[in-house]
Image 1 (tube, protein in one colour):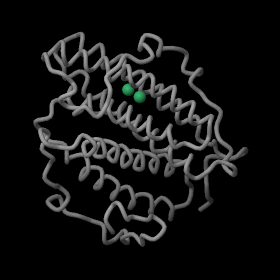
Image 2 (cartoon, protein in one colour; image 1 turned 135 degrees about the horizontal axis):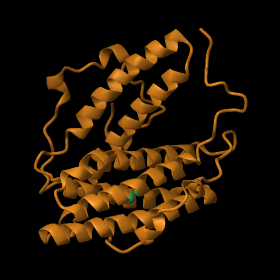
Image 3 (cartoon, protein in one colour; image 1 turned 90 degrees about the horizontal axis):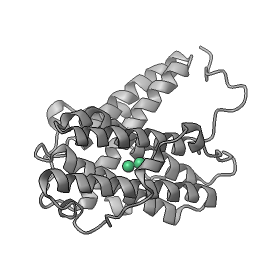
Image 4 (cartoon, helix red, strand yellow; image 1 turned 60 degrees about the vertical axis):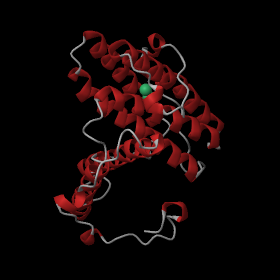
Length: 262
Ligand SMILES: [Fe+2]
Ligand SMILES: [Fe+2]
């Protein structure tokens, strides 16, 4: 593939699936140095890992609804490569980066990505939904920063490198409500711009990844206060996935859950 700045997805030919397999040794790359890394490099690692996870999980759900054997075969082969790419990307994170430091970076992804997408999103309704979520993730970054200060006396700006503001946002206490309130109107698939679809799916993948990280890591903290914060914010990330996912168009009326007949 060409350099990232000149990449044009419409021109890229891709690599045939059968040529994508990498051995375990080929798959693992040297992790970044957490002291010198550009925070946006770390953000890209976190987000890309979330996109790979979403891709793999979506294809599992698709395979369960698909009746066609050929589709199931292709999905199984594709998932094998998604999980290889997921490992390759996620294991660029270094072992000396503690869970709470990684968590600060996860909320930095949420704030920076949501703010950027809201700024360039062409659909006002989608943009308003992003703006709302952004205010909530601001508060998460603030609260985890407070936790880092409380537990270790560390300033989260040493991780954020001054790139992201740490401010109270919409108070987390107000984030817990009937999840049905989170459901937004979905876009019309024939009228929505491809850019809006990409924005929604990208943000959904990032939020889902945040949920996936907090659930198996929150309990690693011995302090009850830290465990409670992960439990509380993990629940909000589930609500964020619900919120962004609901913008996505549902299957056509009458769809039986079986996309093809074998
Ligand atoms: Fe968050
Ligand atoms: Fe979030």
